[in-house]
Image (cartoon, rainbow, N blue to C red):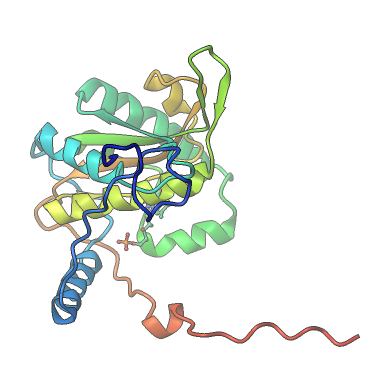
Length: 245
Ligand SMILES: Cc1cc2nc3c(=O)[nH]c(=O)nc-3n(C[C@H](O)[C@H](O)[C@H](O)COP(=O)(O)O)c2cc1C
């Protein structure tokens, strides 16, 4: 936004070459901030990955809103290198299940996952079987756009694609959780089959597959605990000492 003479004020750093707009920032009193932060943490801490879904339908509007929330993520050079591909067709979900299970059979019991990986997965109770891929009302596959194209067809580079898409995935999951839906962060490895099955171009790669819906009545989840603040936080660390020769 300019102020009539083409200048954009003094709080931008490029001398006015590109337009800047005022940032509509909402400031809260500290007690309100703490209350909001505690509520948000409690909400996120209640999230669990669900592997037993109900077939109860979910409106497309909710999926759209989760995509829009995910797409507010920051991204390298604002390239927004993500595509959310949504499927509620029973036929396509069945095809996804079939292809995912064919891969997962090779992982579990087919010798492709090393023993240590299988041991790490054991407490989660996962197997090659993925019935939830057909039962859940929606599957959203998040694709990363490796690069884009200029109008003349030349390749347009994207930056920090994995970091950007990872953040978008987190915000998408948080939005689903906030609206009262559940999902699973699913990576039936390898996921290349999804590019063809979902008709995506070669410059896009499947990043994460999200079955979405409500948990089935009586749904259970693995008993897990999360790391404590002391386990994950380091405050004002000292630099590593130079090695003396
Ligand atoms: C990148 C990533 C890939 C995952 N892939 C799978 C998967 O393929 N199958 C599955 O059942 N769970 C998968 N998970 C879910 C994890 O097992 C789950 O997040 C973890 O056990 C913690 O449980 P919670 O999400 O309920 O906190 C994946 C999670 C992440 C972050």
